[in-house]
Length: 509
Image (cartoon, rainbow, N blue to C red; front, side, top):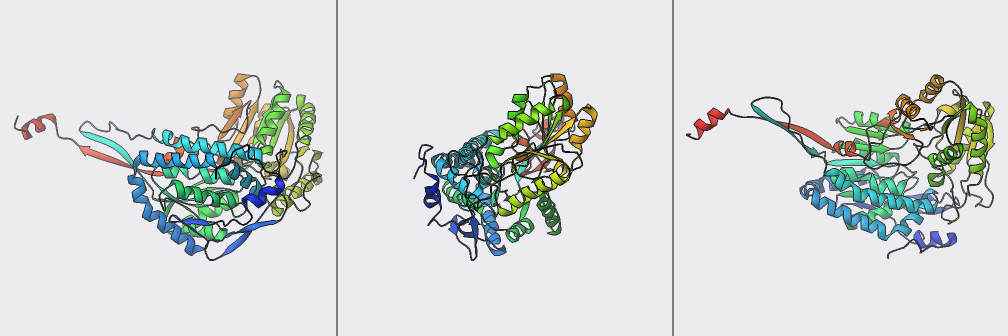
């Protein structure tokens, strides 16, 4: 059945329509399977168990890898046009099921349903965008010698393991395998165990759009992830998630006994720098957008969770930001009125409130939020977005990633000291600069140690530009031609040519 954006259900009916009575299955070799074990997944808005989902073990992962390995030669042989045709089918299926996918995402992740419609739309754009970007991947002819032809070709790795995070589970599951697929690899995809439902629903759509074995979906926790990372057939691994897990994946890949190519998109403690000449109202809106509060409750590696505001506009900015976030409606995620939903789990809620308690103990001032909103389900994982002022650079809340709706504001006077503070964390994913002085904007963008920098903008990704971080924020770049190249191995071919005289003699001329 095709859903439309106008096909909106009351929140009380959403779970019954999209979850209750439905069987969620993994995809292995073109078949939808349950596996031998199951685990529960929970609705963050209510704390109630939603349903059971498969819990893959090493044997399930092994079958998925074997299916991907068997399908890969045929998928590569289909060529760019054949692969692009499958992408077109998948994009149409996403559009056809937009409302179902958005509501299911809100139910399982806690992200507000209006924003999740946007995530489905972004996913469609990426599915349609990758084939065109892949056509830019040409080889090179290199003038390395006078008497030779020197050129490069590339070939896919084979089977790629793709592990995704809980904050955008549908968008990541729909889009993160795409650069590997369009370059001729096959994929085994494993979502976060906290948010498996939309990925398992996508498994059904993958089965419709792609040949059997090209995309395989397994769900489970650390055991399944480790089996995928260490499998000898999987030479290429890509992970989105936390720094500790990223470090573990690097280590386990190295311990597997096989050389593997590992890319990691990890955490961030990102700086937003506000200069005194900026439009304060615009910067406040940028701060709210940049925190991704109305998309995933600030549970984003790219969120600008440290705001460095010049003292000349500091008090004005803090007051305006506190007032702005206090107007956000925190509700059950699949209610149309929700600006912001719950965080993903009880453990995540405890993490957020723990950071807030310790920040206040360290001397920060809680200017807004941090308490439980009214009118929400009692067992849901809700917290009002919090603004902290008086934060000092060495405080835990200024150094460590909260991964939740907590904004820390730091005042500054000296430019060089501000840059030192902005760069004085172990992360380097994103940053944003707010000023009307173009020279100052470029100078500061160059000085900030981050892989993705906005000027008078925040949060938005621009397809085709390389996204990724420095330091502990990861390795590799995504959403760009650079990511496509990371899924192929290059080969250089050298041909020694005979001189023109010898060619004429050989032909009897």
